[in-house]
Length: 185
Image 1 (cartoon, rainbow, N blue to C red):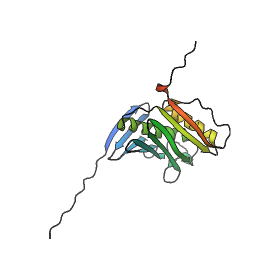
Image 2 (cartoon, rainbow, N blue to C red):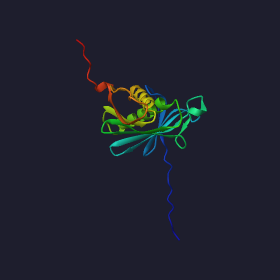
Image 3 (cartoon, rainbow, N blue to C red):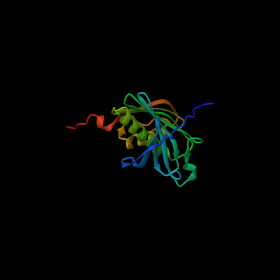
Image 4 (spheres, helix red, strand yellow):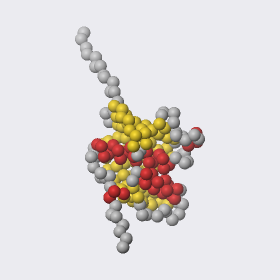
C-alpha cells in the first residue's frame, strides 16, 4: 500500500530589533501576525498586530512592567485593549483594564505597534485618530487616551468630559504633522 505523508515545515519567524522613539523592542513576524515585545516575558509589554485587507488591528496581550503585581495585565484574565486602523485613522475600539495605573502605557504601545504595521503594510499615512468614550470614569479614560495619543504624535482640542460618567463622548485627534500652523500676528 502506498501513501503519502505530508511533512509540514515549521514556519520560522523573522525577528527584527529596534531602538527608536517607541523604545527598545523586537518584532517577530509570522505569516499573518506581528508580535511586538518590549522587555522580556517576565517583565515587559507584548502586543499582537493582524492585517486584514485594508485595515490593521492591534491587541494588548501582556503588560507586566510594573513592580506591583496588581498592575500586571494578562489578556486572558484582565480585559483587553483593541486598536483598529483603517482609512488613515486610528480608532480605539475597546478598552477594558482591570489593572489600574497602566492605561496610558498600554494604549500607547498598542497604538504604536498598530501604526508601525499599518504604514509598513498598507503604505498610507495616518492622519487622524478617534475614540468614543462611554465609561463610569470618563475623565480618567479621556486623560489616558489623550496621553497615549500624544506620545504617538497626535493632539486634540476637545476638552475633558464634563462629568465622570459619560456615554458616547467623541474625541477626535489630529496627527501633529498634518495640523495647520497657528499663526499669531
